[in-house]
Image (cartoon, rainbow, N blue to C red; front, side):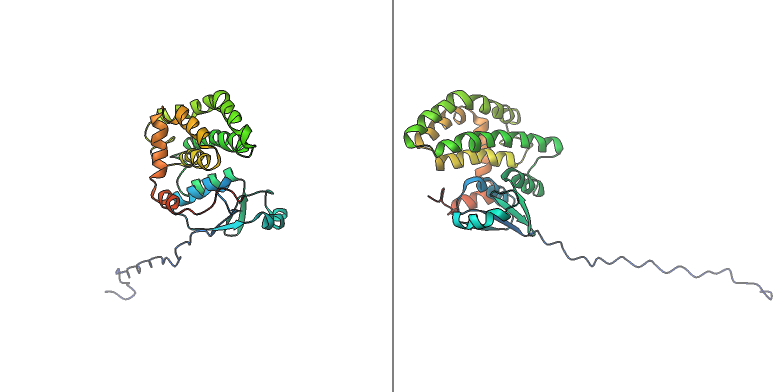
Length: 241
């Protein structure tokens, strides 16, 4: 090799270092549900949490404790769900949040909107119309309930039945349990607890017995492992009376 000539051999580049994953697994958020020490408006939320296998703390409070807490409540009412100490109010907003976090709103945004439609119908049937009747004097309950069954409920249940019959697979939306199914089930769970037996049988006989698709949805919810275990061991009273 002549003077001044250079070698054509080149040093191979060192292999790139593999990136290291030093991130610890993300811990699930800490959930705390605050409500009166009864079932009420928090019960559908509990069922969604149980269906999703979510670990949460239930903070049951008395009416007296609520007087002190109310001025600090985010929307002035109960239930409240705290997610890593961040409060969320309004029962439907809480239910929707938990359902979204745990894949119970269907396959896409349209399914999610359909779930919302159904939940709004269910919420109106029980919490807007039926629940106030439960607190009427005994002699007024049955006449008021019969009027609802004859004049109000047929149209509402017809809307719900369209969804149930169209899907016809034990779910209102998609092919697995959603919070819409759970809210529908909660009508009858709470109704059995709050209304006279005669009224419950009247409603079931008129709207559930003739509709196999409704019966399949109720079965879907009751057979969910988390919900089934919760219902079996549930201790919360119906009211604090």
